[in-house]
Amino acid sequence: MRFDYSGKHVMMLGMARSGVAAAKLLASRGALVRVNDMKTEAQLGEILEPIRGVENIEWRLGEKAEALLEGMDALVISPGVPIESPVVQKARALGVEVIGEIELSARFNRGRLVAITGTNGKTTTTTLTGEIFKASGAKTYVVGNIGYPFAAVAGETAEDDVVVCEVSSFQLESVAGFRPAVACVTNIREDHLNRHHTMACYAAMKKRIFEAQMAEDTLVLFYDDPMLREAAREAKSHVIWFSATQTPPEGAFVKDGMIIFGKAGDCEAVCRADELKIPGRHNLENALAAVAAAMAAGVKAEAAARALRAFGGVEHRMEFVRELDGVRYIDDTEGTNADSTVRAVQAMTSPTVIILGGSDKKNDYTELCRTIVKSGFIAHAVLIGQTARQFEETLLREGYPARRIHHAARDFRGAIELSRALAEKGGAVLLSPACASFDMFHNCEERGDIFKDIVKGMVSRQA
Image (tube, rainbow, N blue to C red; front, top):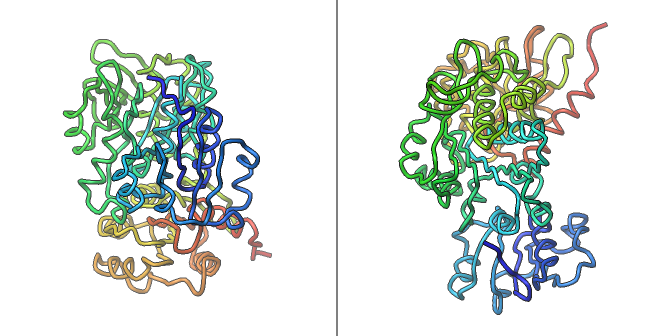
């Protein structure tokens, strides 16, 4: 279905990267675009450069959004604008269509769309799926929540192209007819309850990725996740699975050490599981999800194997930074929820100082703290941010020794310096906060970048 925005009055709310890209896309298609953000032009600065001088764009920055809705045909919201916010409610009351940048971009996209969501693993899975398609020779765009806006490429895709799109629960709040040819949900764990309030609501947002799919489409789900087993009943599309521990009816799995795709009596080997460069069972699961998504779309096993063997991982996800004075420093800043940090803890095999804490998403950290206690490899916990007290209380309740719990001396640099002082030779310092970063940083990538800069700047104390 083709959408014509020529001559339509469209307001773009939220001028981060995706909002700027969406405004430019709309203007290029003849829409009369009104851009709005609570920040002023001076505050937004360089991010606005792509739309400076673009015709059909009216700048209404620093103004109250609710006062600008009259006469609009559509309101496009950035992921940071909750669907329950007053401006969205007013727009709907006025009969203004409300969608997000992902929905808008999908309406202009002509390529084959592969969309991936999930609480954990979605960025690695998205990146690796993109690499598999590239290895197959397809012109491939990797976009969405991963950091490059879908809107930046949606207007230039061709029918033979592939768009691999990471989609967050925030983005899925505002979809309407969003219909991927292949959709994948890596898992559903507790997260973002400060936005979605309940697990039921959060899960419902994740399931919207396949809401508009039809029988000819494919849905890839994690076979080990009971919530996704149940969700499969709601799908109108063809469901396949991935699992590192079980053999599903159809999909990607491991048999005799080999990654396999297909179903009983009709399957083929891709490569050995131990050929993967990315460590940990969770990364094997990510690889299986990517194989299932790509091969369901027609990619051959040989191309999938080439990409799997070459893939070295994603920045900020269990990323080795350096070894200094016998201590390994690992950046897992993308560990922004408890389940993700559980996986990081389980991957550690030497005495580790973990840096925990950040902004409060109203999550429960009991299972994470229990895993830390059971691990035997988490020698110390250095706590930062709004959730530091919550982590201390939960760790103590689960039996972690008080003498091994430390609060950062002053700031993030202090936390890293304290971790270095506590670390022992042959061990590691792991930044895996299990929390968002907004209490101290603009985003988790900034947190990881600063961690790496500080660590790389440290000087050896050995003579």
